[in-house]
Image (cartoon, rainbow, N blue to C red; front, side, top):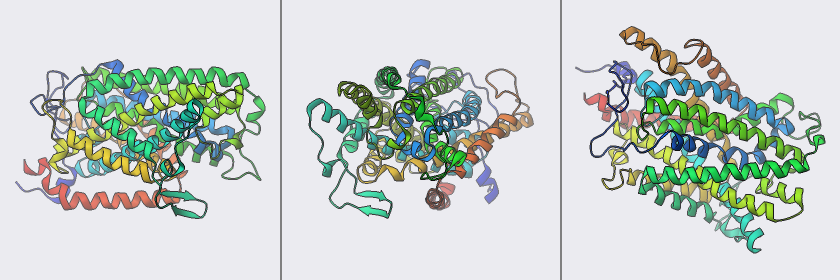
Length: 501
């Protein structure tokens, strides 16, 4: 029976029950979880899943974006982190309910496909691909700074400028091309992540958990030392005022919140692992909420310690900022050496899990027929999508090696905020579909205070942060969305598995 255009755009995936999830069949809501050869293997528990979430967040927002955010907000950057955390918290509740009902690979994409339809799901997938790809590139670039700081403090040697600066650079006068330059360390990092990921998700998760524990210990080390140089005068004036560069008052806080918000990408990463975790209906919601709690506490601790130890005006353009703060506070190089070594390990885990999330989203889209089937071919030996991982790593490595990170931060935030909005919309839509189908049941994780209040507040908060992003970011994002729409109508709508059923 032929479908109309509207029916094709709004068709949703039916649920397929599996013994592992205990899911019940319900029309219009759900996913597929393969257990046959060629599918992903369930190999992770709650601890590994939570560490994936923490690994994807702590490191990006603290190790790098203080340099980008503090010049915008001044000492009030602490409010920026709180604002971003509150927005992420509202969305985390929505993620937790959807992850309980739809424990599938693909995260926001799978949630959208099961609720609001195929077209919006594909648009969501485009946002996620932008979000994860650029986040992996940006964190790999930051890794290069800390690696260089570590080498300088440990051996008195630095990577030559020609091999640690990108070709395409942002400057006050516009885009500058430094021909012959390449940022080699990020390319090497992405290659190492690729090798680890093709070996298997279980091995990658274990390695990530070890690196995350080291990361948390290093950040506690930073807090303890930075507080010895704490000066309350660094918080005065708290808001940027007249005569200072950038935005003033809450406008600066909002702009900075939009910049750091991408660091909460870890919530989305937890949800991408729905098909590779034991008991996902229990562990995915718990993993999301546990990761958010750990991340928020550490972000605020480090932000307060860093602002107390160094005046706001010194953050702008500072390379390997946290390491420099420790060196200035103590007057010795060894604390900076320890922190730089920890950052090198920490950012490895961030890059690893963001590339992992990117590949799992592509896997889910490909399995649904909306992009080439090559992205969901899984190795029989390692149970990982090898070709998918290699392609993603090549793209991420090229961006990280040749493009300045300044271009990437706000674009990642835009993708993350859009994903969070769709997730928030999906909650009331899912509940409405369940009630209409007569399958609504109490029990399990539900967003508190009904299906509209928390998702509505989440949407409003995300839109508020979007206002603070630059005009250039919105223009580039619009171009990306236009390309996604063309791709869907040129390929996805005809090759969709639902189109053939």
